[in-house]
Length: 254
Length: 241
Ligand SMILES: Nc1ncnc2c1ncn2[C@@H]1O[C@H](COP(=O)(O)OP(=O)(O)OP(=O)(O)O)[C@@H](O)[C@H]1O
Ligand SMILES: [Mg+2]
Image 1 (cartoon, each protein chain N blue to C red):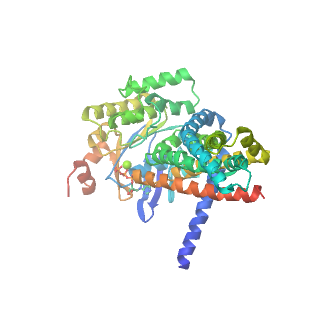
Image 2 (image 1 turned 90 degrees about the horizontal axis):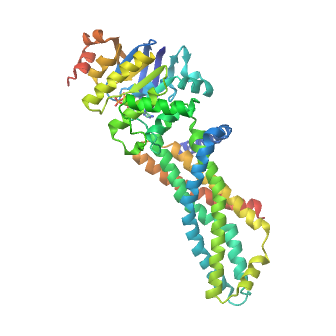
Image 3 (image 1 turned 180 degrees about the horizontal axis):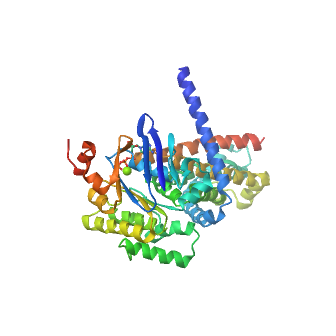
């Protein structure tokens, strides 16, 4: 028993150590702009193309549900224009970033882990090193940067779409007029709502891509190993997003 | 000069290399033979610092590889072309881009890169395949692109990990001839890991047999062909026990 706890602890410390090493390597690779600059653009496009459709799809339906649930909850005791408040705040602060983040973990995180995992087990990573490239600046930095930069943009668009479908639902299904909806939307709006959501999204994008890269590059054991890495990347980044979400709420929203 | 000095390497409980000592002289081609799974690829990877030894080291030009810092290691790697056993081509790039990648890292200008890519592809008989994606190639073609990628660098050392395994006899002979020519023209020092004895006799100046983690015998082609050592005899004659 104690033995097992001991081993677990050692394992955890090793994992944290590897993570730290990885971060240090990444920072060290940052000045190498000539290597990662062009690749980062490629990755940014990929992150955008991969995640935008899913994120917008999810946001569109979330907007509808939020509006309906709000009106259902208020049952006449709260003025109906608060539907606008609830849709706007919830999309910006929580559901936009988190739902898109979870979707992104499944799309982008998984595909990065699979890609780098395959490169690892087929010795492409070794080959890069023998050509005197640094896998950190060639593979990792462009991906992490792309995730961190692109994800807030994806989330911003998702939030807009969600608010729009919420508004259309209010208009057509709840008989709430546009001015009323907008009034609700603006009532408690603070600029912090926007930057909090976007900042949070950037940290999610960073986390998802970093986890995808770390897990991908530590893949062992052929096609099976790649499969394991892919699921692992999704699970780890999903958990990380939820924990991080609670963390930012506790730190920044109190 | 490449010197393996008492190299030890284990993976978990499995001792793969146990005191490998071998010297490869400048300008010669050393062929390393040995049973599957004896650690030939593992030995090669130590030369370029892809693996860290448990004990002992590899000395390239007198410098111990495992002690080099990142910059020195990269400088060393620029002198070495590595042909991977399974080619290790970058799937997302075209053949030409695969060959060009290492050249770009060496800071050559675009014209020179294009020229060298064309030349290297012609040498491995792949003229015109430059625009195809690595993922679309047959196994033998991948292997030849891997060789082109290494020789395009015009390195001082080339390490070939089973360059002719899986190729048809004629292509194998073409690759053998290419390795011989590369040595003659560029004066490169080569280490060739192979199971293919015909290839070994053609390209090798000396042959070393790796067995149970160390060198069982090393000698000129003639010496090895005449060997009395039963283990080596059995291997080169391909007799089952
Ligand atoms: N990264 C690694 N992790 C764990 N074990 C490894 C690793 N690389 C090699 N091995 C093990 O080391 C042993 C030697 O492998 P190696 O690839 O060097 O054999 P080889 O002599 O090249 O064989 P072959 O002729 O089949 O290519 C094998 O048992 C292999 O399983
Ligand atoms: Mg091998």
